[in-house]
Image 1 (cartoon, one colour):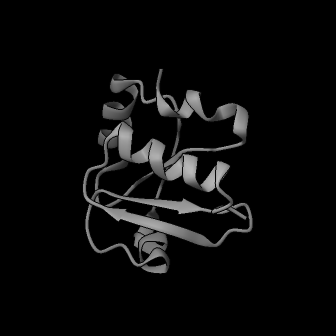
Image 2 (image 1 turned 60 degrees about the vertical axis):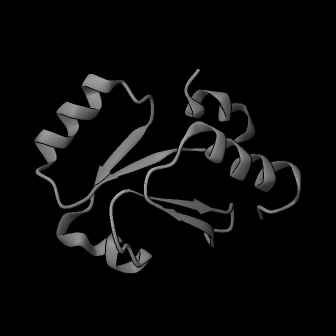
Length: 95
């Protein structure tokens, strides 16, 4: 099961951001892979600037209050993703 499906019942939402890529190419790749979550296009890199993106890929963990709780630069695997989400959801790390 994809992580997006695993955490759906806990109110976790995954959103991918197409950054510095042609939107059509990125959407085609994501559709082909069937990642199972929403994705948006970051026109003019505005979100990247606000979030302080320093490289791709980066994963941000945002609390219910909209505050960035954690960030992982580089690739992330399901074990690391699950550990972070479990900590936020079940050990009080997410507001």
